[in-house]
Image (cartoon, rainbow, N blue to C red; front, side):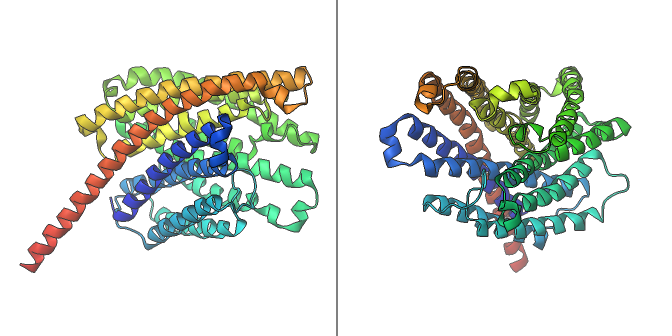
Length: 450
Protein backbone atom coordinates (compact mmCIF):
# COMPACT_ATOMS: atom_id res chain seq x y z
CA UNK A 1 0.00 0.00 0.00
CA UNK A 2 1.48 3.35 -1.05
CA UNK A 3 1.34 6.60 0.93
CA UNK A 4 -1.30 8.20 -1.31
CA UNK A 5 -3.68 5.36 -0.44
CA UNK A 6 -2.81 5.66 3.25
CA UNK A 7 -3.65 9.37 3.14
CA UNK A 8 -6.90 8.61 1.33
CA UNK A 9 -7.92 5.96 3.88
CA UNK A 10 -7.05 8.33 6.72
CA UNK A 11 -9.09 11.09 5.10
CA UNK A 12 -12.09 8.77 4.75
CA UNK A 13 -11.95 7.70 8.41
CA UNK A 14 -11.55 11.30 9.64
CA UNK A 15 -14.60 12.25 7.54
CA UNK A 16 -16.55 9.40 9.16
CA UNK A 17 -15.62 10.67 12.63
CA UNK A 18 -16.56 14.23 11.63
CA UNK A 19 -19.90 13.05 10.26
CA UNK A 20 -20.65 11.28 13.56
CA UNK A 21 -19.57 14.21 15.73
CA UNK A 22 -21.31 16.91 13.68
CA UNK A 23 -24.44 14.78 13.30
CA UNK A 24 -24.67 14.30 17.06
CA UNK A 25 -24.16 18.05 17.63
CA UNK A 26 -26.83 18.83 15.01
CA UNK A 27 -29.33 16.49 16.69
CA UNK A 28 -28.64 18.06 20.11
CA UNK A 29 -28.83 21.56 18.62
CA UNK A 30 -32.25 20.78 17.11
CA UNK A 31 -33.56 19.19 20.32
CA UNK A 32 -32.26 21.77 22.77
CA UNK A 33 -32.85 25.41 21.72
CA UNK A 34 -30.30 26.72 24.25
CA UNK A 35 -27.55 24.73 22.56
CA UNK A 36 -28.94 25.69 19.15
CA UNK A 37 -28.37 29.34 20.02
CA UNK A 38 -24.66 28.58 20.49
CA UNK A 39 -24.15 26.10 17.63
CA UNK A 40 -26.48 26.75 14.69
CA UNK A 41 -28.38 23.77 13.25
CA UNK A 42 -28.39 25.67 9.95
CA UNK A 43 -24.60 25.30 9.74
CA UNK A 44 -24.33 21.83 11.29
CA UNK A 45 -26.85 20.02 9.07
CA UNK A 46 -25.14 20.62 5.69
CA UNK A 47 -21.72 20.01 7.28
CA UNK A 48 -22.93 16.64 8.60
CA UNK A 49 -24.48 15.69 5.25
CA UNK A 50 -21.32 16.63 3.33
CA UNK A 51 -18.99 14.83 5.76
CA UNK A 52 -21.11 11.66 5.48
CA UNK A 53 -21.39 11.98 1.70
CA UNK A 54 -17.65 12.44 1.23
CA UNK A 55 -16.88 9.60 3.67
CA UNK A 56 -18.87 7.27 1.41
CA UNK A 57 -17.39 8.53 -1.86
CA UNK A 58 -13.80 8.66 -0.55
CA UNK A 59 -14.10 5.15 0.91
CA UNK A 60 -15.58 3.84 -2.34
CA UNK A 61 -12.69 5.19 -4.41
CA UNK A 62 -10.16 3.69 -1.96
CA UNK A 63 -11.58 0.25 -2.72
CA UNK A 64 -11.50 0.83 -6.47
CA UNK A 65 -7.85 1.95 -6.51
CA UNK A 66 -6.47 -0.53 -3.97
CA UNK A 67 -8.22 -3.71 -5.10
CA UNK A 68 -7.72 -2.83 -8.75
CA UNK A 69 -4.00 -2.92 -8.00
CA UNK A 70 -4.38 -6.37 -6.42
CA UNK A 71 -6.36 -7.71 -9.38
CA UNK A 72 -3.83 -6.48 -11.95
CA UNK A 73 -0.74 -7.00 -9.74
CA UNK A 74 0.20 -3.34 -9.81
CA UNK A 75 1.04 -1.36 -6.67
CA UNK A 76 3.05 1.42 -8.32
CA UNK A 77 1.63 4.79 -7.20
CA UNK A 78 0.14 6.80 -10.06
CA UNK A 79 0.71 10.57 -10.36
CA UNK A 80 -2.93 10.90 -11.43
CA UNK A 81 -4.09 9.21 -8.24
CA UNK A 82 -1.81 11.39 -6.10
CA UNK A 83 -3.20 14.51 -7.78
CA UNK A 84 -6.76 13.24 -7.26
CA UNK A 85 -6.16 12.72 -3.52
CA UNK A 86 -4.65 16.20 -3.15
CA UNK A 87 -7.45 18.00 -5.03
CA UNK A 88 -10.12 15.93 -3.28
CA UNK A 89 -8.82 16.84 0.19
CA UNK A 90 -8.55 20.53 -0.75
CA UNK A 91 -12.17 20.47 -1.99
CA UNK A 92 -13.49 18.78 1.16
CA UNK A 93 -11.62 21.17 3.48
CA UNK A 94 -12.86 24.17 1.44
CA UNK A 95 -16.47 22.91 1.73
CA UNK A 96 -16.29 22.48 5.51
CA UNK A 97 -14.73 25.92 5.95
CA UNK A 98 -17.44 27.43 3.73
CA UNK A 99 -20.16 25.97 5.95
CA UNK A 100 -18.36 27.14 9.10
CA UNK A 101 -18.32 30.68 7.65
CA UNK A 102 -21.99 30.54 6.66
CA UNK A 103 -21.27 30.54 2.91
CA UNK A 104 -23.77 28.45 0.96
CA UNK A 105 -25.11 28.57 -2.59
CA UNK A 106 -25.56 25.04 -3.92
CA UNK A 107 -28.51 22.66 -3.93
CA UNK A 108 -29.82 19.82 -1.76
CA UNK A 109 -26.98 17.61 -0.39
CA UNK A 110 -24.46 19.84 -2.19
CA UNK A 111 -25.11 23.16 -0.48
CA UNK A 112 -21.60 24.60 -0.71
CA UNK A 113 -20.65 27.47 -3.07
CA UNK A 114 -20.77 26.06 -6.63
CA UNK A 115 -17.23 27.23 -7.48
CA UNK A 116 -15.83 24.50 -5.18
CA UNK A 117 -17.51 22.00 -7.48
CA UNK A 118 -14.82 22.77 -10.04
CA UNK A 119 -12.25 21.20 -7.69
CA UNK A 120 -14.42 18.09 -7.36
CA UNK A 121 -14.87 17.92 -11.13
CA UNK A 122 -11.13 18.26 -11.79
CA UNK A 123 -10.30 15.65 -9.13
CA UNK A 124 -12.77 13.15 -10.57
CA UNK A 125 -11.47 13.62 -14.12
CA UNK A 126 -8.01 12.74 -12.78
CA UNK A 127 -9.41 9.64 -11.09
CA UNK A 128 -11.19 8.60 -14.30
CA UNK A 129 -7.99 9.06 -16.32
CA UNK A 130 -6.09 7.00 -13.74
CA UNK A 131 -8.71 4.25 -13.90
CA UNK A 132 -8.84 4.16 -17.69
CA UNK A 133 -5.02 3.90 -17.85
CA UNK A 134 -5.30 0.80 -15.67
CA UNK A 135 -8.34 -0.45 -17.61
CA UNK A 136 -6.51 -0.64 -20.94
CA UNK A 137 -3.97 -2.96 -19.29
CA UNK A 138 -6.66 -5.24 -17.87
CA UNK A 139 -6.63 -8.99 -18.16
CA UNK A 140 -8.93 -10.61 -20.78
CA UNK A 141 -12.53 -11.10 -19.65
CA UNK A 142 -12.29 -9.21 -16.35
CA UNK A 143 -14.61 -10.33 -13.53
CA UNK A 144 -17.81 -8.48 -12.67
CA UNK A 145 -16.36 -6.33 -9.89
CA UNK A 146 -13.97 -4.70 -12.37
CA UNK A 147 -16.91 -3.71 -14.57
CA UNK A 148 -18.80 -2.41 -11.54
CA UNK A 149 -15.86 -0.22 -10.48
CA UNK A 150 -15.54 1.16 -14.00
CA UNK A 151 -19.22 1.97 -14.50
CA UNK A 152 -19.35 3.51 -11.02
CA UNK A 153 -16.45 5.88 -11.68
CA UNK A 154 -17.81 6.84 -15.10
CA UNK A 155 -21.44 7.37 -14.05
CA UNK A 156 -20.46 9.40 -10.99
CA UNK A 157 -18.85 11.95 -13.31
CA UNK A 158 -21.95 12.05 -15.52
CA UNK A 159 -24.37 12.45 -12.63
CA UNK A 160 -22.21 15.11 -10.97
CA UNK A 161 -22.25 17.15 -14.18
CA UNK A 162 -26.02 16.65 -14.49
CA UNK A 163 -26.45 17.69 -10.87
CA UNK A 164 -24.85 21.04 -11.67
CA UNK A 165 -26.95 21.79 -14.75
CA UNK A 166 -29.06 24.09 -12.58
CA UNK A 167 -26.28 26.66 -12.99
CA UNK A 168 -27.36 27.06 -16.64
CA UNK A 169 -30.13 29.68 -16.92
CA UNK A 170 -32.42 27.50 -19.05
CA UNK A 171 -32.77 24.93 -16.25
CA UNK A 172 -33.68 27.64 -13.74
CA UNK A 173 -36.41 29.13 -15.93
CA UNK A 174 -38.99 26.83 -14.34
CA UNK A 175 -38.93 25.34 -10.85
CA UNK A 176 -40.34 22.00 -12.05
CA UNK A 177 -37.60 21.57 -14.65
CA UNK A 178 -34.83 22.35 -12.19
CA UNK A 179 -36.13 20.19 -9.33
CA UNK A 180 -36.83 17.23 -11.65
CA UNK A 181 -33.26 17.21 -12.99
CA UNK A 182 -31.85 17.76 -9.50
CA UNK A 183 -33.77 14.94 -7.84
CA UNK A 184 -33.20 12.58 -10.76
CA UNK A 185 -29.43 13.15 -10.71
CA UNK A 186 -29.28 12.69 -6.92
CA UNK A 187 -31.02 9.33 -7.23
CA UNK A 188 -28.77 8.20 -10.08
CA UNK A 189 -25.60 9.28 -8.24
CA UNK A 190 -26.44 6.89 -5.41
CA UNK A 191 -26.46 4.12 -8.01
CA UNK A 192 -23.02 5.24 -9.23
CA UNK A 193 -21.27 4.97 -5.88
CA UNK A 194 -23.20 1.77 -5.13
CA UNK A 195 -21.59 0.26 -8.23
CA UNK A 196 -18.17 0.99 -6.74
CA UNK A 197 -19.06 -0.17 -3.23
CA UNK A 198 -20.94 -3.32 -4.25
CA UNK A 199 -18.11 -4.16 -6.64
CA UNK A 200 -15.75 -3.99 -3.65
CA UNK A 201 -18.11 -6.20 -1.61
CA UNK A 202 -18.19 -8.75 -4.44
CA UNK A 203 -14.39 -8.71 -4.65
CA UNK A 204 -14.10 -9.34 -0.90
CA UNK A 205 -16.58 -12.23 -1.11
CA UNK A 206 -14.52 -13.88 -3.83
CA UNK A 207 -11.36 -13.52 -1.73
CA UNK A 208 -12.95 -14.73 1.51
CA UNK A 209 -14.54 -17.75 -0.17
CA UNK A 210 -11.70 -18.43 -2.60
CA UNK A 211 -14.32 -18.81 -5.33
CA UNK A 212 -13.88 -16.36 -8.21
CA UNK A 213 -16.90 -17.91 -9.95
CA UNK A 214 -19.06 -15.60 -7.80
CA UNK A 215 -17.98 -12.75 -10.08
CA UNK A 216 -18.26 -14.59 -13.40
CA UNK A 217 -20.92 -16.18 -15.56
CA UNK A 218 -24.01 -14.99 -17.44
CA UNK A 219 -26.21 -14.82 -14.32
CA UNK A 220 -24.10 -12.29 -12.41
CA UNK A 221 -23.66 -10.15 -15.53
CA UNK A 222 -27.42 -10.18 -16.07
CA UNK A 223 -27.82 -8.71 -12.60
CA UNK A 224 -25.16 -6.13 -13.43
CA UNK A 225 -27.13 -4.96 -16.48
CA UNK A 226 -30.27 -4.84 -14.36
CA UNK A 227 -28.33 -2.79 -11.80
CA UNK A 228 -27.28 -0.36 -14.51
CA UNK A 229 -30.90 0.02 -15.59
CA UNK A 230 -31.83 0.81 -12.01
CA UNK A 231 -28.91 3.25 -11.74
CA UNK A 232 -30.19 5.19 -14.73
CA UNK A 233 -33.95 4.95 -14.16
CA UNK A 234 -34.77 3.91 -10.57
CA UNK A 235 -35.36 7.43 -9.29
CA UNK A 236 -39.15 7.31 -9.57
CA UNK A 237 -39.81 7.90 -5.88
CA UNK A 238 -37.80 11.14 -6.12
CA UNK A 239 -40.23 12.73 -8.57
CA UNK A 240 -43.66 11.37 -7.64
CA UNK A 241 -44.62 14.74 -6.16
CA UNK A 242 -43.27 16.74 -9.10
CA UNK A 243 -45.92 17.66 -11.72
CA UNK A 244 -43.85 16.35 -14.62
CA UNK A 245 -44.93 14.12 -17.52
CA UNK A 246 -46.90 11.08 -16.29
CA UNK A 247 -45.05 8.63 -18.54
CA UNK A 248 -41.77 9.47 -16.77
CA UNK A 249 -43.24 8.46 -13.42
CA UNK A 250 -44.79 5.30 -14.87
CA UNK A 251 -41.61 4.14 -16.60
CA UNK A 252 -39.51 4.85 -13.50
CA UNK A 253 -42.02 3.03 -11.31
CA UNK A 254 -42.06 0.00 -13.60
CA UNK A 255 -38.29 -0.25 -13.67
CA UNK A 256 -38.03 0.19 -9.89
CA UNK A 257 -40.25 -2.86 -9.47
CA UNK A 258 -37.52 -4.92 -11.14
CA UNK A 259 -35.73 -4.61 -7.81
CA UNK A 260 -37.99 -7.40 -6.59
CA UNK A 261 -35.57 -9.65 -8.43
CA UNK A 262 -32.73 -8.23 -6.35
CA UNK A 263 -34.88 -8.58 -3.27
CA UNK A 264 -35.48 -12.31 -3.78
CA UNK A 265 -31.89 -12.92 -4.83
CA UNK A 266 -30.48 -11.12 -1.78
CA UNK A 267 -32.62 -13.22 0.58
CA UNK A 268 -31.48 -16.45 -1.06
CA UNK A 269 -27.89 -15.30 -1.34
CA UNK A 270 -27.81 -14.16 2.27
CA UNK A 271 -28.99 -17.57 3.52
CA UNK A 272 -26.57 -19.38 1.22
CA UNK A 273 -23.61 -17.32 2.42
CA UNK A 274 -24.32 -18.15 6.05
CA UNK A 275 -23.87 -21.83 5.25
CA UNK A 276 -21.37 -21.67 2.41
CA UNK A 277 -18.90 -19.33 4.13
CA UNK A 278 -19.63 -20.48 7.68
CA UNK A 279 -15.99 -21.33 8.33
CA UNK A 280 -15.17 -17.62 7.98
CA UNK A 281 -17.67 -16.40 10.59
CA UNK A 282 -14.89 -15.44 13.01
CA UNK A 283 -13.33 -13.09 10.46
CA UNK A 284 -14.17 -9.47 11.22
CA UNK A 285 -14.41 -8.59 7.50
CA UNK A 286 -17.01 -11.32 7.07
CA UNK A 287 -19.01 -9.96 10.01
CA UNK A 288 -19.15 -6.47 8.49
CA UNK A 289 -20.28 -7.89 5.13
CA UNK A 290 -23.00 -10.00 6.75
CA UNK A 291 -24.20 -6.91 8.66
CA UNK A 292 -24.42 -5.05 5.36
CA UNK A 293 -26.48 -7.87 3.81
CA UNK A 294 -29.00 -7.61 6.65
CA UNK A 295 -29.44 -3.88 6.03
CA UNK A 296 -29.76 -4.44 2.28
CA UNK A 297 -32.72 -6.67 3.10
CA UNK A 298 -34.36 -4.12 5.42
CA UNK A 299 -33.74 -1.02 3.33
CA UNK A 300 -34.64 -2.55 0.01
CA UNK A 301 -37.96 -3.63 1.47
CA UNK A 302 -38.51 -0.06 2.70
CA UNK A 303 -37.44 1.37 -0.68
CA UNK A 304 -39.90 -0.85 -2.52
CA UNK A 305 -42.72 0.30 -0.26
CA UNK A 306 -41.72 3.92 -0.88
CA UNK A 307 -41.84 3.27 -4.64
CA UNK A 308 -45.58 2.59 -4.43
CA UNK A 309 -47.31 5.94 -5.13
CA UNK A 310 -50.06 5.38 -2.56
CA UNK A 311 -47.45 4.80 0.15
CA UNK A 312 -45.10 7.49 -1.12
CA UNK A 313 -47.90 10.03 -0.66
CA UNK A 314 -47.53 9.57 3.10
CA UNK A 315 -43.77 9.02 3.34
CA UNK A 316 -42.36 11.68 1.00
CA UNK A 317 -40.65 14.48 2.87
CA UNK A 318 -40.96 12.73 6.25
CA UNK A 319 -38.44 11.05 8.52
CA UNK A 320 -39.14 7.77 6.68
CA UNK A 321 -37.20 9.14 3.71
CA UNK A 322 -34.39 10.02 6.13
CA UNK A 323 -34.56 6.49 7.58
CA UNK A 324 -34.12 5.03 4.11
CA UNK A 325 -31.16 7.31 3.34
CA UNK A 326 -29.48 6.79 6.73
CA UNK A 327 -30.14 3.05 6.78
CA UNK A 328 -28.58 2.75 3.33
CA UNK A 329 -25.64 5.06 4.07
CA UNK A 330 -24.79 3.54 7.44
CA UNK A 331 -26.19 0.02 7.40
CA UNK A 332 -25.08 -0.90 3.87
CA UNK A 333 -22.42 1.42 2.50
CA UNK A 334 -20.61 2.14 5.76
CA UNK A 335 -20.58 -1.50 6.84
CA UNK A 336 -19.15 -2.62 3.49
CA UNK A 337 -16.52 0.13 3.53
CA UNK A 338 -15.47 -0.61 7.11
CA UNK A 339 -15.27 -4.30 6.24
CA UNK A 340 -13.15 -3.35 3.23
CA UNK A 341 -10.78 -1.31 5.42
CA UNK A 342 -10.41 -4.18 7.92
CA UNK A 343 -9.43 -6.48 5.05
CA UNK A 344 -7.06 -3.91 3.55
CA UNK A 345 -5.31 -3.30 6.85
CA UNK A 346 -5.09 -6.99 7.77
CA UNK A 347 -7.27 -6.72 10.88
CA UNK A 348 -8.42 -10.35 10.67
CA UNK A 349 -4.91 -11.34 11.73
CA UNK A 350 -4.73 -9.06 14.81
CA UNK A 351 -6.62 -10.38 17.83
CA UNK A 352 -6.59 -7.21 19.96
CA UNK A 353 -7.83 -4.95 17.20
CA UNK A 354 -10.36 -7.53 16.08
CA UNK A 355 -11.86 -7.70 19.58
CA UNK A 356 -12.42 -3.93 19.75
CA UNK A 357 -13.78 -3.90 16.21
CA UNK A 358 -16.30 -6.56 17.24
CA UNK A 359 -17.35 -4.50 20.27
CA UNK A 360 -17.79 -1.39 18.12
CA UNK A 361 -19.76 -3.31 15.51
CA UNK A 362 -22.20 -4.75 18.07
CA UNK A 363 -22.79 -1.32 19.65
CA UNK A 364 -23.25 0.27 16.20
CA UNK A 365 -25.77 -2.33 15.05
CA UNK A 366 -27.82 -1.95 18.22
CA UNK A 367 -27.74 1.84 17.93
CA UNK A 368 -28.56 1.76 14.21
CA UNK A 369 -31.57 -0.49 14.74
CA UNK A 370 -33.01 1.86 17.39
CA UNK A 371 -32.07 4.90 15.28
CA UNK A 372 -33.81 3.51 12.17
CA UNK A 373 -36.93 2.51 14.09
CA UNK A 374 -37.21 5.96 15.70
CA UNK A 375 -37.11 7.62 12.27
CA UNK A 376 -39.77 5.28 10.91
CA UNK A 377 -42.10 6.00 13.83
CA UNK A 378 -41.49 9.76 13.60
CA UNK A 379 -42.10 9.71 9.84
CA UNK A 380 -45.29 7.66 10.15
CA UNK A 381 -46.71 10.09 12.72
CA UNK A 382 -45.80 13.14 10.64
CA UNK A 383 -47.10 11.63 7.38
CA UNK A 384 -50.41 10.67 8.97
CA UNK A 385 -50.94 14.06 10.61
CA UNK A 386 -50.12 16.08 7.49
CA UNK A 387 -51.74 13.88 4.83
CA UNK A 388 -54.60 12.03 6.51
CA UNK A 389 -55.52 14.61 9.15
CA UNK A 390 -54.67 17.61 6.98
CA UNK A 391 -52.85 19.53 9.72
CA UNK A 392 -50.90 22.39 8.17
CA UNK A 393 -49.45 24.11 11.24
CA UNK A 394 -45.88 22.83 11.58
CA UNK A 395 -45.75 23.13 15.37
CA UNK A 396 -48.94 21.12 15.77
CA UNK A 397 -47.68 18.48 13.37
CA UNK A 398 -44.35 18.12 15.16
CA UNK A 399 -45.64 18.10 18.76
CA UNK A 400 -45.92 14.26 19.07
CA UNK A 401 -43.02 13.77 16.65
CA UNK A 402 -40.59 15.66 18.87
CA UNK A 403 -41.06 13.13 21.67
CA UNK A 404 -39.91 10.37 19.33
CA UNK A 405 -36.95 12.48 18.18
CA UNK A 406 -35.59 12.55 21.76
CA UNK A 407 -35.34 8.76 21.52
CA UNK A 408 -33.76 9.24 18.09
CA UNK A 409 -31.01 11.48 19.56
CA UNK A 410 -30.20 8.92 22.28
CA UNK A 411 -29.96 6.07 19.77
CA UNK A 412 -27.81 8.26 17.52
CA UNK A 413 -25.34 8.74 20.37
CA UNK A 414 -25.08 4.96 20.79
CA UNK A 415 -24.57 4.55 17.04
CA UNK A 416 -21.88 7.25 17.01
CA UNK A 417 -20.08 5.52 19.88
CA UNK A 418 -20.01 2.16 18.09
CA UNK A 419 -18.86 3.49 14.72
CA UNK A 420 -16.41 5.83 16.48
CA UNK A 421 -14.72 2.87 18.18
CA UNK A 422 -14.34 1.11 14.84
CA UNK A 423 -12.96 4.23 13.10
CA UNK A 424 -10.43 4.93 15.88
CA UNK A 425 -9.19 1.32 15.86
CA UNK A 426 -8.72 1.46 12.08
CA UNK A 427 -6.96 4.84 12.26
CA UNK A 428 -4.61 3.47 14.91
CA UNK A 429 -3.85 0.47 12.69
CA UNK A 430 -3.28 2.79 9.70
CA UNK A 431 -0.83 4.95 11.67
CA UNK A 432 1.00 1.82 12.81
CA UNK A 433 1.27 0.67 9.21
CA UNK A 434 2.64 4.06 8.18
CA UNK A 435 5.22 4.03 11.00
CA UNK A 436 6.39 0.54 10.02
CA UNK A 437 6.65 1.65 6.40
CA UNK A 438 8.72 4.69 7.39
CA UNK A 439 10.96 2.53 9.58
CA UNK A 440 11.58 0.15 6.67
CA UNK A 441 12.48 3.08 4.40
CA UNK A 442 14.85 4.42 7.07
CA UNK A 443 16.57 1.04 7.38
CA UNK A 444 16.93 0.82 3.60
CA UNK A 445 18.46 4.30 3.49
CA UNK A 446 20.95 3.36 6.22
CA UNK A 447 21.86 0.14 4.40
CA UNK A 448 22.39 2.03 1.13
CA UNK A 449 24.51 4.69 2.90
CA UNK A 450 26.73 2.00 4.41
